[in-house]
Length: 248
Image (cartoon, rainbow, N blue to C red; front, side):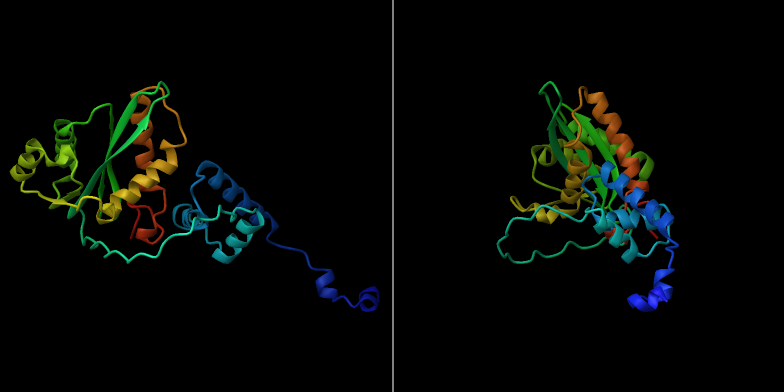
């Protein structure tokens, strides 16, 4: 009689939510993921829950909770000029067909500069090496790549920029000796090496810009552990939301 008097449906009045506990679990996962990985958006969080943790939650439900937690708020991006769309890079058809290499720079807590030498396999964007050092000349680059080839096999092509380490006689002679073709990008056009540039950006925002290291050994240790996480647990859009070494 009370429901009829107030015009309220009896089924609506007596309704009890059945998924409250699961919603709390989803919210807890989202808060923890965005707390640990502040550079992750909804897409990476959902891919991690679905493809790494194995949960079958619907993406609309997860996104609703994501918005209720105000995790979808982002800083407004700057206005960009309209530019011609660059020609997309060719997608390799197998592993070891094309590797991309590049350097990154940062500082230790005492102000000393250090470099990171990054190598990825373009096929599934698998991270192969992150080598840290105060100085990484061509001899050090050759040694790192030679060690990598010993357990993985050699690539057909290596894509890189025109840095002095990559155009040196030592590096080019080493590549010729191993029958590896060096594909140099045009000066001032990093988009031609977009796979490794995107990988560098991920490294930058995931841990390099977040942590202040005291020694080079700390950098190398963290880089090694993060590379395992990147290959085995971090979702990647290029692989359908799956980590590089879990991609179907």
